[in-house]
Amino acid sequence: TLRQRLSAHHGRVRVPGGNHRGSIFRLLVGDALRRHTPDFEIETWGVGASADRSTRERENPLEAKVSAQIGAMSIVWLKIDDAPGQGSKRGFIERNSIAMLSNWQRPMIDPPSEGWLGGYSSRERVQHSGLWNNRHVDERYDADFLKTLFRLIKQQ
Image (cartoon, rainbow, N blue to C red; front, side, top):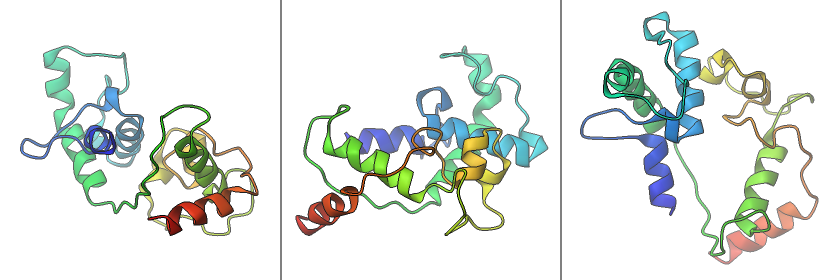
């Protein structure tokens, strides 16, 4: 569900932290924070699909900082009731939104702010697309995308 997905990205609230191994968004934000702030250099960040308790405890200060960073962001969502999958409307909107907003290998119409944390990412696609994404940043958007998006917005 949307609530579960957002929770995985944002992390815990009461005891700040999270699991970057369960959220590519957390992984990317933490990677940029590590490169921006040397105090957060943690060798195990992004290593493996799971980690033991002592590793997670060493990573927790950075996980907490990632939660704070993501928690300060605004979100907008659009309700689309269909099953997830490659042919879903949700997937179509996601892929094409990323493709349309991406600055990857094209003139920047709307560049990220000068101090955008993603500029510190080790991933070239994040740095140069201006988005917290690796996937779909190099694609062109479908011309019917905006019509579909506007139709879905009107249905809200």
